[in-house]
Image (cartoon, rainbow, N blue to C red; front, top):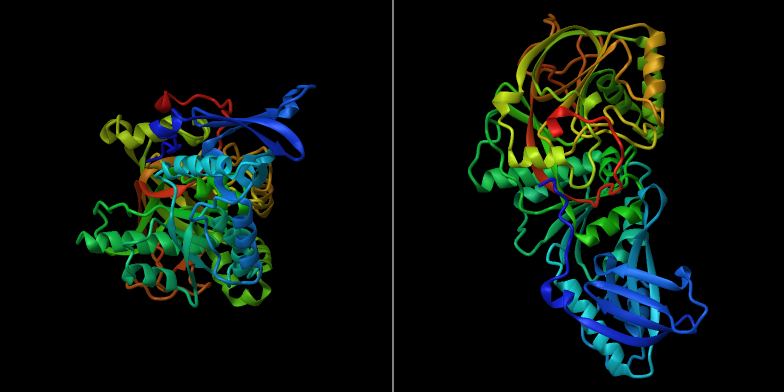
Length: 523
């Protein structure tokens, strides 16, 4: 479901009341635990707001005895198997409270505070109580399968895991099983065959392509287990049981940016530890009654497809290969004839609200409170296109803060179809400038058309250099290819269909309300 599942303390924890005096940073402080909230304040005047801290247990990562914490961190530094908090330590006179807090630009940070007391029994009582409360958060993962792509982006996947993610997993007491990918398709093939019985969730460290391999493998595994033919374009694909965590480690990381509001690694890891989930739409790409791929962010024909195909020849350049190929293709300014048929939703993206935590529009569509046949109609769009895009997300990233469609919803069962007509070189430059803008979108450009659809088909204009059998396309054939979550699809004629909230992903989303123009379909 897209309604973000925020954890609440269980009844036992919410009724628990603890009060004691601890020494924190050489100051005596009164510490309270009441109704799922920790409060500590200095015991002596002068009192001020800065001398009082309030922390909901939902933002707590763990509580560990002082000597236990030091031992775990030493094991990580020496690259030995990390230990997680386990048995009570009746001799410790301090405990470390690990928590996270959010700051500017949606970034979360790990913090810790050490509380000391002369009586070890008081320390043990507090640690046991806090741990029991955290164990009551049943949505938090306990055992996770981690895939690391060591080749994505700047090839820092393993460093990200060892330096930034694994220490947080140890702090939270999460048991991890690590698999380092060796080839394209490794994740997908593994998830189709491995036993998932003792796994709570799957985490991937990499780019959008790595994440795509994870959910393609999980959905196909679920379809196989339930004997559903995924190649049938009309099939209702089953949702995977396991939620997925996305930790950015690629070139653009549009999925991580759209879900977390940032490509900060620590923020993504903390969201996973918290265990809050939201439902994410996935779209299937079919051709000739065959499932080519599922995607989560964007599928693009024309310019971005040409860039992806051309950039494959320059992988040695790293992420800069996209800039080089992009410059070449913007100069070439090729256009492609085609026809788009789409099942249109009346809520135009420009009139829609932004997708936030507990988004009203996504919740309505999750519960199917509005019958599809009453709000959709078929439209046909033909012409010569510079680019055709089907966006499941805003597709925002550090290079494009607003993305293709800033008001795209992650769980409303719709894809935003952004059509860029073939136009002049100058207009193409305007398009790229808009995409890099922090406050402007594409909606009002005269050569851009935007639709919101449940599904759409694309048919390329006939050409003698292409056969429907799916033969390879040359760059001079008069046809382009599809860029699908960073992977190339050679077949131009496709049917794309949205599967509403098919995947559960870890995220707390953006929580502050933003004033946006109202949309009649979400009121």
